[in-house]
Length: 580
Image (cartoon, rainbow, N blue to C red; front, top):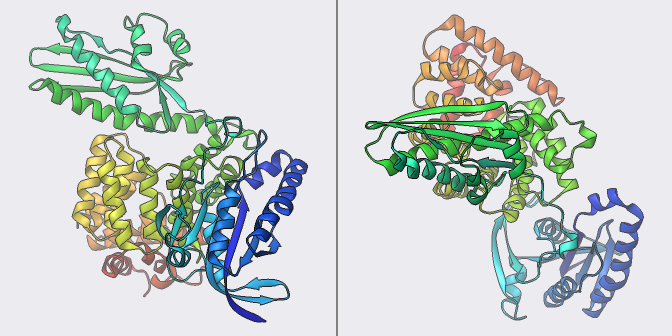
């Protein structure tokens, strides 16, 4: 064995799995030719040595960090050719290695491999050690990517990206964007006797178009196109076909005296089925204020209704025929159940979706969230925190403006126990939210886990006000919020029903009954909790040894920043009769 300090270069092909599924022979031929030709020549030119090829990549060592980085940069600047060129992720680390029988081992090698997984396609990522050694020596423009928690690496690691090395692939190689639901907002009908009120009804529709345009899961028909159908006397199916829309939003405004009534509905364009409708009655003291309030409420509700309908259609598609986007939507619907069995199924679908199309940012968000849900249920594997954070960062790297993805990044920090980073992230996300009610509610839950009970209640209550038709998961959140704010009856009212999604909800129900002194109901709820907990363990092949607090509830502890918050729940379970 020989121990020495060396620069380690780790390179990995982008999209290897999906390309192999399309054409194994062509992929292997192109990869082998590049690694044994261009890559080998570059490593040799910069006085390095290829240690080994690892399927879709290679590992090389250099005596000089400067030579290793120069090799990586030159590698990524090799002109790409052909209709589907091969691209790589590359990372460089400087650390202690052990050389034995032609191979290398050690923490320095492990760190290079982990950083390579975070590198952008066509880019180069280096450890903080490499950056500090080189500085501006190579004339490189560096970008600080922040601190990362990596699998099997004890301490968080700061990494730096070389700017200017990640050009978009040629137009012919770009994956087709996922087919989004197309929604058209028709001009609202002015039902008032005053023709001048048309400006108000038009303003409502225009604001809804603007608000919906911010949602990444929707494609919104432009105002100029949809407002051509002002008369609204045509067949909705024909209007939708002319606009290429899957969904139509129609509405009317009626003004009488100092009051205004605004009616709105969302319909499936093909079947004509009404998916959602609402009526708003308001005092018309301030026209613009009413317009803003109603628009905000409508925009908060519509995307969720559309996504629910699209997910329902995806669930009817045979699994072997599903594309990446359909897989993501089906997985999202499973994940929303927040239970152990569906979460495991969702993870499998999302892993398939990533392999088919690694460019859909929200796929990484939902995949990361499956590890977070496992943490909530006390079923997380030891590597779950690192995996959740690694995956969430990939999603954020693809789209850093989606508030739902920002939400998930915060939960990944929570999962990793990086409480301060999580708090800062959720404050940032909350500041970005305009009408995204579900994202707002999950920010509120995060503040609860961080120990800010009253703030959590305020944020979640506002989200529920924005979207009165919110999914059961938001009641699941609010039920826990009310428990920590001392409102046991409110907790029971929220969690007894559709929001009793998992054993954690049942734990709060049992604890709430116990705190209210309702012993018989507490005992019954506790039996449900024990049965559900055993079922969760069984779904993951874990044996439930006994029915004590440590055996059944200790797994929940990791989700709470403050030990006393977990103890409040545990004390309630003990009061309900769970063994100490």
